[in-house]
Image (cartoon, rainbow, N blue to C red):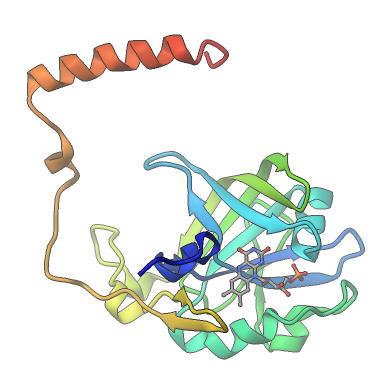
Length: 213
Ligand SMILES: Cc1cc2nc3c(=O)[nH]c(=O)nc-3n(C[C@H](O)[C@H](O)[C@H](O)COP(=O)(O)O)c2cc1C
């Protein structure tokens, strides 16, 4: 089956987070977000894509910070309330009934009851005609104790972080399920000869990108 090129999300699961911000005028805002991803493990930056008409984008640019909150599947109704295009002077904590929690490192409040709160500061905006890419640095990351084991790993089957598959006319809300295979990161590393070959390749790539130190 051949899909239209704009149907990328119909073959690609995405996370659902709630981004909380505060405007210059002090009005608190919440919006659901799926176009968001960490930038490479184990760095501490994330990138999100935003249409330029979003209050979230204006707030991030005006205040320089935001919080990425991870909702659980049972918060899906509140997620949809926050997706409505309320005017910028509407407090979306009041509209959704979600409760704020004090952030440690940024002015934007987090959302109580979420699985995790990532406090972020604005690093860079990459502007396009109709949208922006926002690179943020995670400056504080806190998670709900009861869903983490002693090794610091999330019990995602119980925590049920929200995710999504898009359809043509709507969204299917989903959650991750274990498929029966666990792999150590070390399994990705190859034998010594291959590593030498890869080092040569990295040298070559650096030559192709002289503008990056
Ligand atoms: C599950 C879900 C994911 C969304 N992801 C994005 C996104 O990645 N980028 C974006 O610009 N809008 C996204 N939206 C739309 C915004 O959440 C929505 O337009 C919201 O009203 C924006 O609020 P704001 O203007 O207060 O920022 C998403 C909506 C939903 C329901």
